[in-house]
Amino acid sequence: MIPRYARPEMVAIWSQETKFRIWFEIEGHACNAMAELGVIPKASAKNIWGKGSAAEFSVEKIDEIEREVKHDVIAFLTHLATFIGEDSRFVHQGMTSSDVLDTTLSVQLARASDLLLLGMDKVLAALKSQALAHKYTPTIGRSHAIHAEPTTFGLKMAQAYAEFARCRERLVTARVEIATCAISGAVGTFANIDPRVEEYVAEKLGLKVEPISTQVIPRDRHAAFFATLGVVASTIERLATEIRHLQRTEVLEVEEYFSKGQKGSSAMPHKRNPILTENLTGLARLVRSAVTPALENVALWHERDISHSSVERGIAPDATIHLHFALHRLAGVMEKLVVYPDNMLANLNKLGGLHNSQRIMLALTQKGMSREDAYKTVQTSAMASWRGEGDFQTLLNADSKITDRLNSDEIGEMFDLGYHFKQVDVIFSRIFS
Image (cartoon, rainbow, N blue to C red):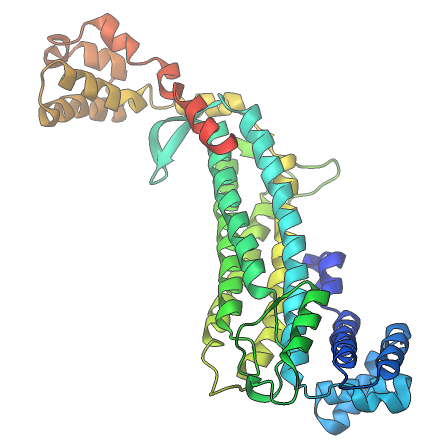
């Protein structure tokens, strides 16, 4: 993660200060639960919570201790003891490091998910606004990047909205699955700690109890979470790539907002480049790079090893920070997107009505011609028009195979642009109802 692609509210979740504060909350809540069960004195639990809550943990001092003991949780507990005093002997009773580390990661990923969902809501709002504004703005649909049949720019935006809405649902599911708490002790047997402690801590932190941990929370949960982030990233890239293509000079149907005083090139003063959507394409690659390591983390040795640890220390902050930034950047792009309806219509008409070829073919089949013959007949005129040998409609009217079945008025009706948009309301009702 670099500051250029980071927003402060997400960065704060992954700060050392936040991490140590969550560590203490886990330990403090566990002490309160054990006091209620009579495992430790209530006065000690009160002292631990009071002094720990007021403590200003020093990242530098904890790091200094860790350099000696070579263990991050022990370093923290040693530092915590300087605030709490004698009652510190009751901290971490029956617990193991993974209880603290894994539960903290769950808290951080849940909080990160909440910020990601807010970012996704901004994207959805921008897409809905564009979809409604351009519900009937004609544009050419492309398959294989070649003109196909007419669509509307609103439908393009509606498709993107529907895809992001599915991503949002997946992220909600991923958040539920990742938000689990494990306070089960060595190898997860609760031999030295009561399961009710885990239930108490989970409730206080807004988590669910991990049904069975093996000293660690099973990493299939994390794999599913990062896979979901990867899908969201790919959806961002899909839309960003569409914008980039539509901004090409030869197309110029939409354009990223170009602010006053902005410069597009250090060499060429005329340039207006799609730099934001290109950036989004790159950020999507970074987010997806977390998916394979997360999948490989699932296979740990026996009840626990720490091969996953170094991976998660990198991918958890990086993937969530980058995706959070990308969602807000995409929302800004779509909110300010410059749309050129006249260029869309000009491009749509560039092939002189060839996009109506299917309508002619279907009409011929309705008049008794076989589909194969209808296809070949229409294709003959279409390819001649493609080669610049005449206007498509004129060529159709000059072919007796066609005019024997369709008169000129019927052929002309096949070139009505509105025909292609008669079901737009139906599609919109499916998405925005």
